[in-house]
Length: 384
Length: 230
Image 1 (cartoon, each protein chain N blue to C red):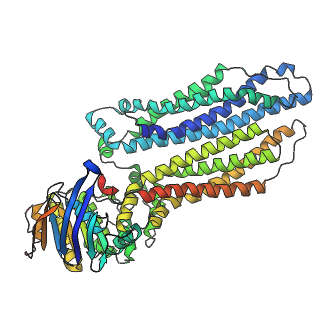
Image 2 (image 1 turned 60 degrees about the vertical axis):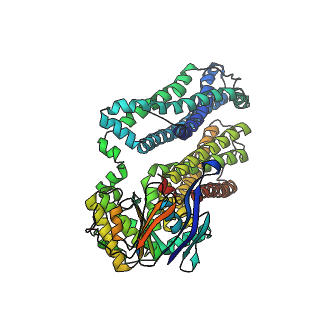
């Protein structure tokens, strides 16, 4: 199996998500494991309540962010394997026609797991680099004895090695599953969309405009991209608003705010850029054809990119609600320590600022890709 | 009338550049059927691209009645193609996620043509409007691309090897539809092909080699798609 540089670059998105997930989980879980060592030194009721709240908060943040990012990594990995198979259907079909088994072809897909290993290993290493500063910040309250960072092999296995093995195996199994079709279907590049259509034929309204129908079919043909774009705006909305709110309400120090902010920016940009790149590349032929026929640049842009706007703003709305709930939960934990906890309410100013910045950023990214659409050659369709 | 004067076109820069068209001049009357013949690399597809406004020539002019399109900007060229020309390619290039009806509507909407379903019927695809491209044979797909091109009511229809990917029987069928619709609707046809037999269907035949017109003859009696050899 040949994975070209272009394919590998696409997998960078998975690496970034894995990096973020492992980075956050390692910081909090490592701190939790190290806290166990000082539990015997905690005597007062208030300190014990604070200890329990810290452990609970670490576990919640790790499981919420880790779980959410793990799910996204799975979706993204499966999407890229499907994308890879779709892009190489002819070659894979010929291999099958020659007598190679599904298993023999798919076992090479383990290399997709390397993208996870790259992300998890760098996330794990990165968290250890930041750990002294993180521990200083977490120790700041003086309620618990000072905790120093220790290396936990269990975390390395559970957060870096096992996920890589799991994703490698998942890639092979999924590849094997996707190859289960007649070789001719692959050689003739028959799509799954067409098989689904046969099961459920969608009747378009007879008099709808072609551009509207194309926009809908572009979105329907790759539901994973709708998810990625919604996820991207979800990350942007939740992480940005969270970093603004926790600073305003003094719920966390500048380092935690910076981590949330950087992860938000990284996740949202990587996901959005990869999704929109895929949308534009996958539709290059249609755009070229539309230009040949005389459709204007604005019409091409609208048909290909505008259909995702609803998903983007929906993702933003869900992200806003999510971060508000998460902050409420965190405040709830600290309130249980009977320590003075600031009042929190929905941060409308932060919401407005993040919404405006989101609109600007999203439209700028779409505008950038629209330039790419403008550059697609009118003659490109004939150069295949 | 399409009037092409001293059109030159080259690709690449410096030593690696190659001259695809070396000063082509020709006139194509409205409502005629012109076939451009020539071996690979003779410049026939480049001539089609330049004449149809898909590419700009390096020099020379291309006039459609009173309008010179050789110096138009991108926007104006797009508008020109929208209002004047239709295309049919060897590889069909249908939109895979849209059914026959919607693929043809792609052309029809540009011309505000509400009666486009008549063209689907006219190319023999009545009853297959809800089918998707991968559910059609090669010949049917090419007929969808014929219907798509004609649904925008073009003044000129450009065809680049339209039967190149079809067997004889299907190729004749597709040519027959194009021929009959051309006679009925009166649009101009400019077709590039390797198949010398197809030249017998045309009013005007142009032979090209090495970027030049080496032979041009007109006024022959047109044959139907079922009267020519293959």
